Image 1: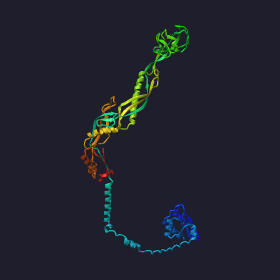
Image 2 (image 1 turned 180 degrees about the vertical axis):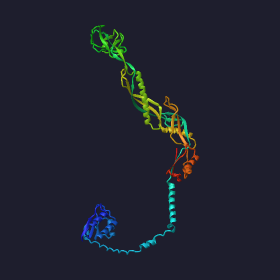
Image 3 (image 1 turned 30 degrees about the horizontal axis):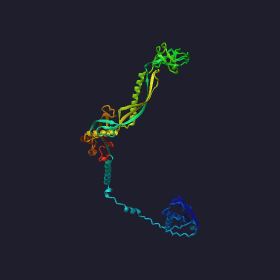
Image 4 (image 1 turned 135 degrees about the vertical axis):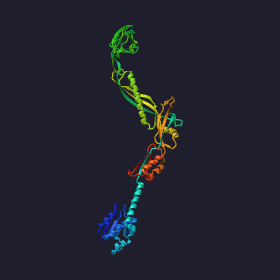
Length: 494
């Protein structure tokens, strides 16, 4: 008998296999399971495929070695074979004849039966008054639930407050390892390098060299040999005011032989005007065989007045730059510390100057002077946790009964810290903190819940000592009573 063979693939499912069956035009349809791929068809899927094959007038058969599939097929009386060859050779089991379903006769009295089975309404439900009362009860129930759960209230209380303060003698040192109730706290050291460049306008007048002094000297031979003295030979006074020869001269051989030569000061200015017999040394090996002296004073060296920085200007600018460096170092140190760490400002100390460079050399004209300076500073500080540990015991002892603190501690120095030779820093620290009378939130709930806004405010003022009138806001704003349920009321104490 003609058989349609359909080889299944791994992606096949009930829908795709059913579509493949629809294209078969043979009395037998054989589904072949792949050997190495998994096809997921359940027992119910096989039943659907069997019925679809019956509707096409064909008999369904399977080729598979999978035990579960074979078992499901046998339970549905679907023939199962080991191969397609055996399926074509062997006989197929004849399917059981399908039973014909007979349609039931239509029932003509369904409306009557439905009316008999429908539950009967009570008389009070059918009446108008009963319906109105039921509706009113339902509306009242909804309003009651809304009144319980929808309104919310925010209550702000400002109870009695007191400022708690204490004066603590503090001793801070790098050698301390822990906080002591006597006031000893560990100090920590920090180093910072900063640089500042500053320019100052100059109005001072300084005397600047203008022309070089001139004159002549006399060289005397100490030996019997002839000595050649080149131009540019340097001679000097005892105060090291230097001159140079302007010409080359030849000193005749023989002891006490002399020769004169013109000279000019190396540096311009009045300093080159020296008295007679002040030039006495020769700055070269020639000084071993000759001597020098100026028979007359040198003249012609002059100075001129000009705007320029003098020594006072330089000292003032340096002092300003050092002050700016210290301020910048303080800011840099604060930026590296934690927000609440306590910096001992008086311990900021200049450790080393790395760079000190003026823009113009000394004795130079100019209407401005700049200084670039780089320096290293050190400072000591106290950790916020250590201060908190030290001050908490003092403040707790001063805290009135029934009060609680509400904000952060404030620290104020009463005197400038002093550091002795051993590195121990002493100072007095005033610590203050605001506290308020403790409020029992449960009491607040019991006083105000379910009351209108005015009565709740009055009750709170009568029960608690407050700095100002309580603030109560209700949501929605048109609602005039506070919620009955406590978790719908939020209380804030300031």
